[in-house]
Amino acid sequence: MSGTGNSTYEGFTAEERAAMKEHSQELKKAARRASRADKAAEAERDVLAKIAEMQDSDRVMAERVHAIVKAEAPALAPKLWYGMPAYALDGKIVCFFQSAEKFKARYATLGFNDPAKLDEGTMWPTAFALTEVTAEVEARIAALVKQAAG
Picture 1 (tube, one colour):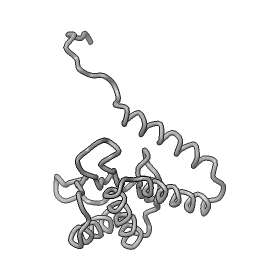
Picture 2 (cartoon, rainbow, N blue to C red):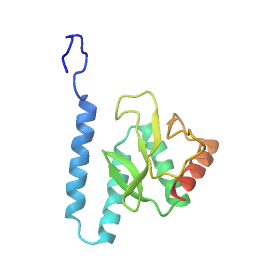
Picture 3 (cartoon, helix red, strand yellow):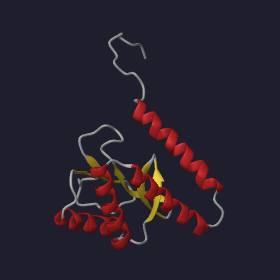
C-alpha cells in the first residue's frame, strides 16, 4: 500500500498505550494467583482499588455501578480489563466501566461486550454515556446488567 504523505495516523495515544500496558500487567498478575477463590477475591480487591484511584465524580459513579452489578448480576465476576473495572461471565468480559479521565473524555462510559445478551432486533446500543448516577439511571443499569448476564 503506498501512502500519499497526507496520513495523519500517529499510532496509539499515550492513554491507549497505558491501557495496553495495564492489561498486560493484569494478565501476569492473574496467572500468578493460586486458587480460584484467591483469584476471585484478589480480582475484586483490584477493581475496588482501581475505583478508589478515580477522580470524585468517576469514583462515585463506578462505586454505584459496582454495587448494582454485584446486587443484580452476582454471576458476573469483577476483574480489571485494560485498567478498567469490568465484570466477566465464564471468563469473558460482559460489561465494563470506563472513567472519563482514563481517555480524557467528557463522560464516563458503561460498555457491554459481545457476551452481553442485550440483543434487540438487528441493532442495539452497547455503550452508554454516564454523567451522573441518579435513581432512574440506577434502575436502567440494573435492568441492563441483569439482561446482559441472563
